[in-house]
Length: 77
Image (tube, rainbow, N blue to C red; front, side):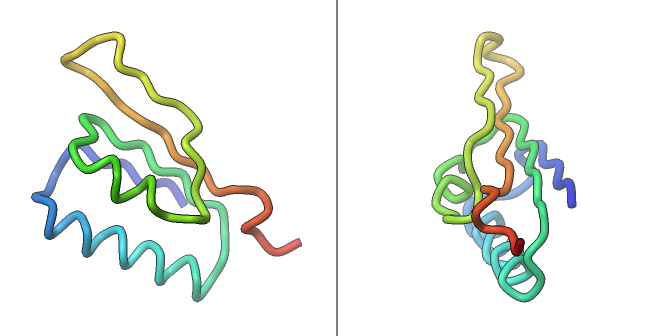
């Protein structure tokens, strides 16, 4: 699953999205990649134990983004 976000929500709405992604992963573990452009609520995604920060790009202050990817050990073998 690929999730692309361009800082679309306030913190309350983003928390709901993060919680739903976590619940979805718990119900059906699979690879999830999150590409989050202008990551105002980075910490919410960073708090998910099944995701690792794969890349953080902030060399252009107008176009920062982060990429999270599922930790291999979080996936069923």
